[in-house]
Amino acid sequence: STSPPYSYMFALGLYTGARLGDICLLKWEDKVVIKNKTVKLGVDLDRKTITMMPLKTQRKKKIVKLPIFLPLLPLLHELRDETGRKKG
Image (cartoon, rainbow, N blue to C red; front, side, top):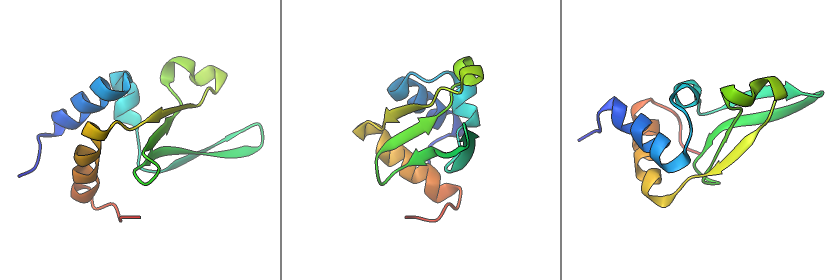
């Protein structure tokens, strides 16, 4: 059985400390250009990291890399599978 949609957001907030707005904007993969350099943002299940640019510090273009804690991994794998995102 799958988890209700809000459980993913709740778990992400609980295990990362990220704000709801940042969680809602999170993507599997995204890229931004900062000072002529391309920076990869998103959820990387292989490296067990979430790289994001929080809304609160977006003007400063601050990039934050968060570890994915083990209890969160199964939920993220489930979410990836439900959204049709290719593995790997």
